Image (cartoon, rainbow over all chains, first blue to last red; front, top):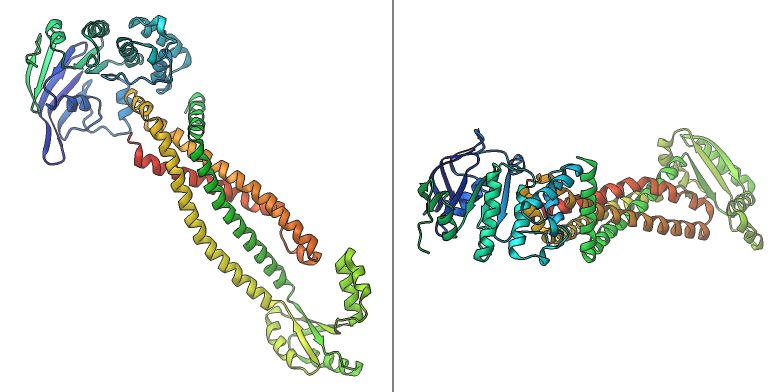
Length: 228
Length: 298
């Protein structure tokens, strides 16, 4: 569903973030993106989110080239992608339900659809009983589950998780991984950037390792491979 | 755009307005004060032009005051002299008694005040009508030279002065409004910036979820529109009552003929209301666009 062909990205003249990235991720895959800080992981994620534009190469999404898509069309592209962040990014003055519904409101979904969809995804992440709570009343794991619910509420075909377990203790991290795996099993492609060695090693999913701006490894059933 | 979305935008705009009420008040005052200055300038210029216009239309006749010591014969002679001047179509004699009577009528209710005068201070005069208004100015110069003529009263000088003063006010006003307008835009853009900062997190999420750029921008533009609109409406109300007060003041202090040249408050508001609302909203939109351009990367 996503293909990078010879992608290069540099900032200005001197800072090269990515070089000759060739990668193809198919529908329904679960992919870890690993690598040391500053290796180009976040640039890779930013290119997926269309937050940055590649300076070389071509990007395809569902067999359509989107390398130079107009900035007007980027919001529409983003609607097919759900995003999960390390810091959750929930709105503190909205309840769990409202935080999730918000993602549907701003793409102008119908009220009826919102009323059907929000409880459904809250059930999926196991937060049906917390719908009326505010983020400050939740644990870290619960907050991340709200953010997962929000990322999938518009039925994206791809979910991108940027260090989703970075702020959580190991037990809670596994709880989040189970939710992500569940979402993946429903057919959604998941791309997850992470530093969590134990998770990557246990899950035995595809691992793309980026170092110094290049993909140095792309294993079908990989391991983390760094001792950090 | 869906109705529900419009409702959402308006609500967000209002929330922004209320969240930074201190700055909102500052923005609204800046719009109001700029428009008040504009209002004062417009009322002055419109009235001066109106007086000039009415004055000009009356310039097909002039009044020639005669010296007091003239005998009836001499008055006749001056009359014949005037009739000989080229461009003059006919003349009318107005005796000092007639003049006083006319004045009494003009003063209306206060006319009785003139009854207490011991001597009639008004001179005898001829009212001179011209065939062609264009020729009147040359004729005035000749008539002024006729012996027995004391003074020629006509409006051209006053009109010329009025027009040049009006032009001057217009010029000064233009620069003043320009400066005040920029100040208002600047203050509004800072107010919007506060809302932008308060909603930074929300905007960030909206961006990732795929809200369109205009969906994100509209609430801020509407906030600017509200600021400008409220500012212009307040200015309109102030101008209405201020002008009404000034109008009544002039009407009661000066005799009615003069007041008749002044535009009524309804005519005035009719002239300025769309100017005010358009400028207010325009300044508001410019202010928020400036802020959005600078601080909102969508």
